[in-house]
Image (tube, rainbow, N blue to C red; front, side, top):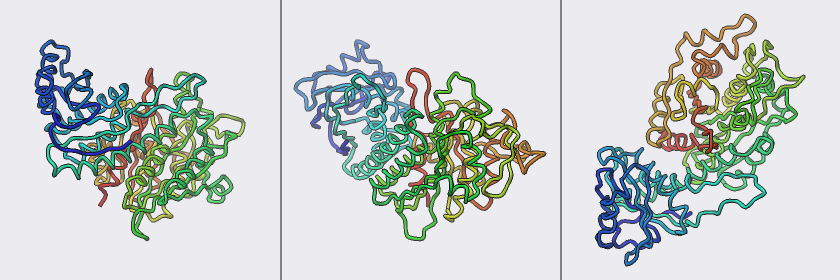
Length: 494
């Protein structure tokens, strides 16, 4: 996909599809009014007949003659006084999806010409490119029948009000293209079935990523090395499966030599049965998504390489399955982590924290500036925040605020949740240094408190994406989140 930025009137811009807006009040956007004048009032008549009402995301396609474009896509923008970053992205997503269903090979969006609260030319371009990437994504379905047709769209332009905004919009488009590519990789990995996307498959994809980009290197640690490193907590999770565990290391060398890296740690449970604490069958198929934290690390590394991020970045991915068998870890077992601390395993379905804690300990060897772990960690997070907002918890309030702000800019939102001492007390154990679980109350927070026990001296944050990583129902699949948040965070780190 080629993205480009332009300026000038919609009445003169040649394209196969011009994307213009309509507000709920019946007011045409600037570009829609310009095209309407060329088309003899055709768009205004459409509105007058109430064939288009301006509801946010509602689209109407017009085939036109005697105009610089072959089609006009009229997109609802909602209330004019409320048109901001969120509404712009929603309108762009709807527009891109509608264009993808046509035979248009080229389209120009004029929505970015409109006044958009709390945004600028850079984000108008970036959010547009991300939206197009999201709309054009196709699930890697394994079917014997013919796959749905690939969209014809090859070129996408974003129009700006003035020439002075074109350069910044172009930079935003380039970053958005990279983020979309990273999110697509995340979605591909997460959407694959667990009999395909195993720890070994993830390791292979890491090597492929390193072959694709000069700035990326990959290293894979196998179980003998994990045993030598005394990662007893990580290995306790994989004890019940025949699939060998892997610790996957990805490096993007974009900063100065010797610069302290940012480390992203991603939970890579490629399938989670719950182990001996077996899950209920309904919805268990969705546990293939339990490696989305790992997939988002892959996606963030790919995006960083695509856009040439000027920062050293390291991805640490503990990858394994959690299966029941005669060898599996049992509730009540005590395991020793790489840090030397012992853990009473109360619930084998609280396995994500058991693999992440050893990965966090391992990340110390890189002397990181920041460590962020990403995980579909707790159902409690879904209860607390639903499917719209990720949770962020941290031992550094400023770091949590930076992540929250990145989420707002990227329209990939997170909410800062507490980690008070009282929550830590819930993890006390009579038989080990602490337990891995303590019941449902405050479950997202106590899970973060568990991880915090391995982060002394680190500037660390934890992002729980259990509610935001994928959608269920008829449109079941990965969302690609939180790749936009992570990349925005990395771009704005001092």
